[in-house]
Image 1: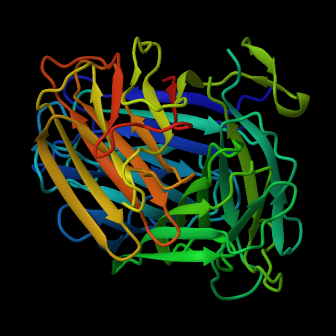
Image 2: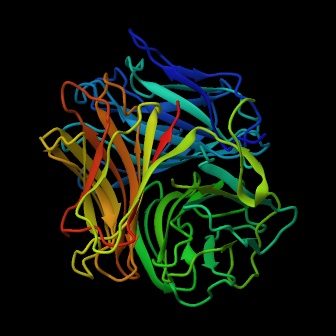
Length: 169
Length: 171
Length: 188
């Protein structure tokens, strides 16, 4: 019986933090994946980014983005697929808000990703409103996802990530 | 509790084709969410375009678009008024790879009292990223949607291009 | 699978998933100055607010803006940031120690023309976290308008679960007829 929008799994970081937030053995029964993240890292900055790994593979990632901090927006490229999140120097108890959308994650083509993300702090500068087009140049079906900080070494306690499956039939 | 987020229809092209159409869209939802993974059947990049209508596609100059883009080296914004379609991407365009993905959200598509607005996120990592708002200046309900790479029909979408339509129903 | 099996579109059977409609407000004739969602259930992990709205701000003003507050808190416990394009140029800005989060952009008094905004509020009931919002919204006016990605933060202490959301126009005094506000819950 089809369920269109279904939670697959969730992760909450406990006391002491965690180097990664992982989703393993992702079922191949959905069409698309949606990953929602509320994260803060131990990076000594107001903002950081989450970095994504599919199937434990560390190569062949890229993204092209547009982002705003204060003043004029910018655009850049990276050799990772990044979503903005909070760093440890942001306002206390404040976490980022981001979403990765992965269509056709079981298909035999390269994997494209749509990223909408923000970090936030009670200040006027150094947050990121960040939109990105991501690519994993690998034709394997995605069976696992691992998130890690881009600049920091661990996610802070209370960071969460929830993985949803979206089914077209 | 009724199903709130429901798949309506999906089309995956088995051969190259000019348009992907959804017709007879039920008016029972509040918003439509369209997930598009498009590939061009020829080399080079083109922008996808959207036409909508009520029992027929509106081909008049009744569409407009405002957008924000990133190229990887520059951020910018532009707009197009009095167009014959909504521009569904700009730098996040469609080429002959499998990289283009887009999410279109048609808000309150079935009412007969407001002009119709769509929010779009379009992406191609080798080219650019877009956030777009599009307007159809009609108060008619939308019951059909066309996505095309060429309003004249000459440029085709490749086999494997897929568009899936979902409905969201408010209480 | 055990679940609610319901008749869906075109007669096919669907099972209710993890994206639920909580409440909806459609503005009637005469308009309203405030839209409030109260008594928000704590059974979900995230909230999504989907808005199609216009205000009675003077037509041709390129739209209006919404103030959003939580749990009737109107103290300086908020901040927000913005990335936007208006068709002619781009901008980014931040506002700290505010009495509200701002959402952009609604329509103005231009006939039939509404703006749309999608707001995602994650971990809304977690009392270990301030509440961070992410919103993507836009208004096109056939030669004018704006598209924006915005963030917001509510950090009242002690930290609270969100139980109510209040929305008011910034420049106009009313949300006008047919404005539509829909709140959804996402299970986690």
